[in-house]
Image (cartoon, rainbow, N blue to C red; front, side, top):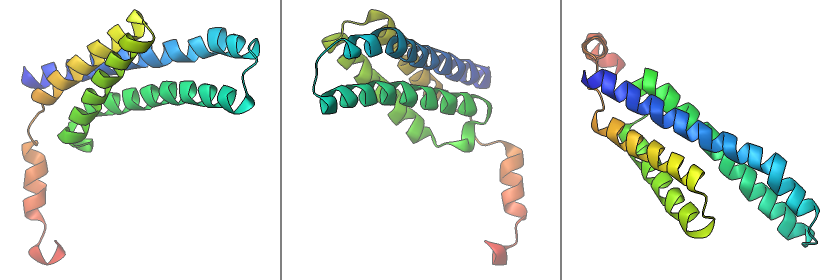
Length: 142
């Protein structure tokens, strides 16, 4: 039961964060790119805004892929990394609410953060087979 809860929490976190990434990639191509092309900003500022936007979308996509990996292979990443990434999304959510008013992306970030933190609380123990193979390794090879 606990392992299934962990699995579903991480999957929901991954799907929510992938939704944020998709929303930002679509927003770049349909809204931001057009708005920046029709604006007379300095080239450095224009490119910086584009880079930040795409970096945030790429970060969300890569972290969602990491959550997907962790959902199926829990011990491929440490629990502490997952907790830090879940807290990072909570900070991003607060910043989105404060500066952009984007309720959809911020809501998805809240869902991702809460489910990832719940998944970290339900983190499964090491499997007995993993600990048995570690004991079979001779002392000279450790």
